Image 1 (spheres, rainbow, N blue to C red):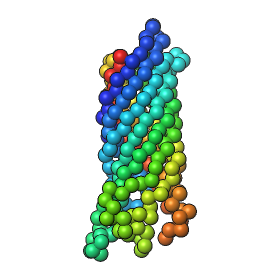
Image 2: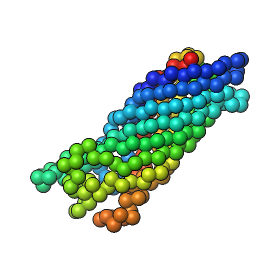
Image 3: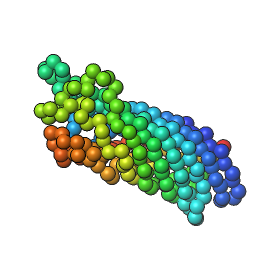
Image 4: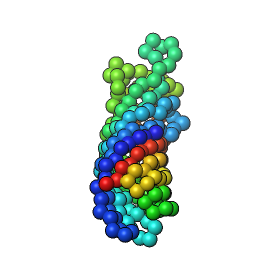
Length: 208
């Protein structure tokens, strides 16, 4: 889940308005895959945005943001007895273009649209875990799976509600591209890894 506080500066005249926003908060990130055993991680996000009246009951929202995501992936313990989770973190930049349908003008709205996610490699939280073999494999290590796909497309949908200047928002992002696909060209133990990102966001929004 994500909780963020957004400070937004705007202009308003009748049903025409344009707001600039700055946000910060936390997110829950995971990868939907049957090829790795993962555990959802919690991290943070910050964005700059513009929300403006577009047509009839619709707003248009542009947003750019920085996201740090965390995830744990199961591996065999170094002792050879049992398993342990390997922690990773990942930095991403996002560009969003969202449509927003106002159920109640400036009170309750539904958001939906595409997200371009540009991310780096998976970074190990603990470097001494890099040689651990990923659970379910013979020689694929924690270090081997760091170089994931850097350009990914997501779809976002959610709901925002409250009063004009203070609102709460719940959003979900699903990755439509295979973010593990880049690993399939690395000569690993398998060459058909598949996984789609899954992110839940909860936000508090303050408009000025």
